[in-house]
Structure formats: C-alpha cells, structure tokens
Image 1: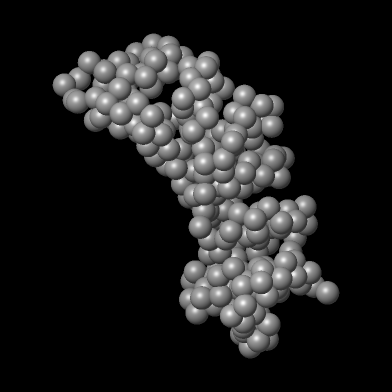
Image 2: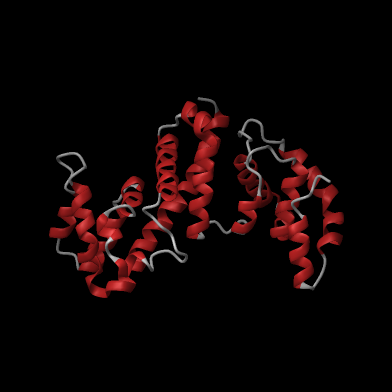
Length: 260
C-alpha cells in the first residue's frame, strides 16, 4: 500500500475516532444527567447484553462490574472499552429505545434512531471504521460516497467537527470535485483566519477536498493551494469585509456560486 492511501486513511481515522469519542462522552454525560448515581446500573443492562456477543473468554464488562471501583469509575471504564459498532448498536437496542427518559434527551436534536435512515448511516459509519482499521483500499473505493456521507452526518448531529459550520458542510456538493478556488472560498467564508496559517489551511483544504471526490493522491499540490490563496486574499478580504451580520449571511449564501 502506497503512502498516499495510508495518509488518506489516517485523515479519515482522525475524524472517525473523534466521532467515537464524542459518542462515548455523550453516553457518559447523558446517562449521568438522567440517572445520577444510578447511571451505571441502567447502562450495564446493555453492557451485559453486548458482552454475550464478544468472544467467549472476553469478560471485559463483567470484570469491571465485579471490581472494587465505585460505580462512576466502572461506568467510565466500561464505556471506554466499547467498540464503535457496539456504541452504534445501542441506539437500535430495546434497552435504549424503550427508555423514553434517555431516548428523548440523548441528542441535542430529535433523532429517530430506529429509523431506516439513521440505521443506514450507522451501518456505513461502522463499515467505514472497519475499512480504515483494516486499510481496505478496495472497499473505500467502492463505498466512498456512502462512507463520507455517514461521516459528515454524524459529525453534524454530534457537533464534533468545528472546522466548518454544519450548514455549510451540508450545502457542499459532494458528487463532484470542487476547484481549488472554490474550496479556498468556502474556507475563507467560514474561517478567514486560516489564511494566516498555511498548515491549518492545508489540513482543512484536504478535509473538504476528500469529501468531494478527491483521493489524497489527486489533491492539488501544496504550492498550488498557497499560490491560489495569495491570489484570492486581497479580493476575498474586500468581498467579505462588513460589520453587517445580514450582509455576511448573504455573502455566505453567495459563496456557493464561486465559479460564476
């Protein structure tokens, strides 16, 4: 496997792990908010269930349960041991779905976790995680669009990617490659200060480009991105310089007609 695909996998891995950590933090936070000191006991019903589907000698959760730790420590230790697939399966499990107290308050927006739409996103996210973990280049090529769509969906509902606003991410047409100029204008419209840091600019540029059909090997050369940045800087500063919030919003809307 060449260095290009390995680098691409590492970029996606970072974002997938961020989603996994956000989900784990959410489980700990929301169950504790709802049940206080009883949070671990409520969650353990699911932990005990998924342990049955692990290899015979894997008694991770029961060992933690029988340990001398206090319940809050057991809860943290158990959630940290959950696999991505186990976390995602929680949301279609009766232990979660029948528990209205947690179900209705879990996400910041109403999410029907037993809907076909959500379950498809969860399935593709799990497959994406496995694909990256096993460096399955063929699988990534075949299911790239589905994988990236699921990645962006979970980043949106979890608010765990602060590089761009999620309204902007949803408006980006991921069915075609965007020009270097277009991607730079998207970044400037959202994060103009990134134009002062070439390293951050390149990282965010790559994130957007990989969402829109590029592979790491096909990404524009770094010198080309920076050259375009300097060419655009003066013009963009003039276009977006305003103190009127309504004008800013209007220009952000117009920023998706960049190539006109």
